[in-house]
Image (cartoon, rainbow over all chains, first blue to last red; front, side, top):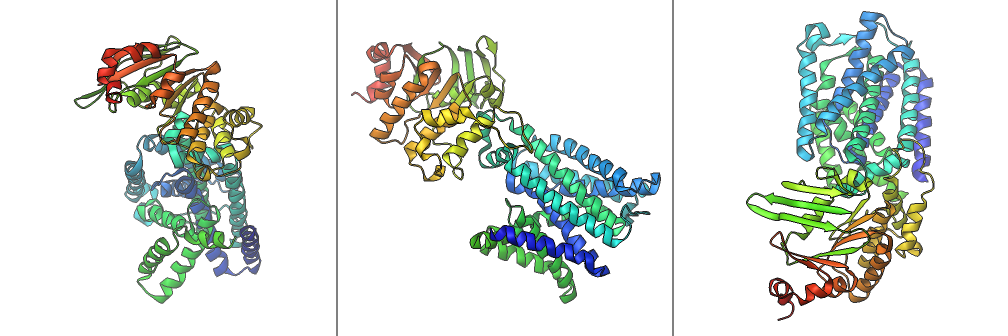
Length: 298
Length: 240
């Protein structure tokens, strides 16, 4: 009950930021909400299905670059046209990467997904036609103005939360949890678990693509670092900090990391060490992440 | 119902199942017995698709299913339970059975589950209706074994593979499970691995004795009890 109330308050507070029109806060909280979508999408794999994927940045980056390509080369800007294409691109990449990497399990799955994301990083980093290491500007953005972009991101966050909540309460979501707990048992009960895992991988990849699309739309710039292992590692850390296996955990983790990153940067040049210390502290003292604090009071 | 033909499974130099050819008649309770390491559980794992055979064939109703996956075999009507209670500890009894019954429905991404009469029947059949809301981890071990059988029944199998369903149970709980197995086997075929000889001889129609991965003897419980070879190789250990 407390959790629901807090989430509603948080959603309204985020909505209110949109009416301030303040350039800094629109960009800052927009970035934080994109982080929430990205982290929630990964949590479908890590927290619910038990798949630790390091390929998640790939879908974020593919979608962002697709938007840049559509805008710069084909003059396609409207979200009605670009969003479905970018999401389809991310979904297609997730089908291919998922189909291949889900043949491996455990640490081998992690390594295969890492290999895919690094391959894409070097492909985009070394290809001058794709902007090379400098990246690309999105010449014309899908949303006119920061405020419109902010409300689009807010709407996307609310929709993603609602859709994931529905998916997790549907038989499909229960099956994913069963797979995480005991895949052998699920198979012997008749669940085609490889198919379930692939569908989860594609849903998560598509939502990561949505985060990448919104990021490119907000900043008007894409670069190969969006594919890198650091990006995949950071979103994984977000999930762990917030609390895997919950939807509100990744939201809390993304908000916290965005603030720590921004204000830590002003405080010290070693702000990355701050994040490291935070992760160690949470793992040691809050094994269920920040979400554990909410549960304890719920 | 189910046949194996020269079925082998090797682990390096060890032949855990070595040229086993058996036929399991429909509607009967078949027990597999033998000393530890005889290959009983390996044979069950081969029949349920969890292990790949090194050579040989498995046929279900005349169809070659040797290389079928466990989920495909389950959907063909083979249900499987394990040596230890293999339930979902965080879920309630009803949720565990409900989840198992979902395996027969198409994948539903967004819609809620419809009514699942099979799940209700399975809970009733296993005497767990009054314990449906209790978390699986809080049920007694005997009840967890009942729940495991209920989960298998919720998938509406025609053939049950049960691996030591009485392991770790006290006398009263074991009696309850034996009664349940009798009830469950009324309209199903059952292949049972079990060390409790009293239970095996009281409920099995045929008994197969495995030793060193091979079939030593096969027959009715009375014939197996009377077999000198079986007494020397296995039962003799318990009846000096």
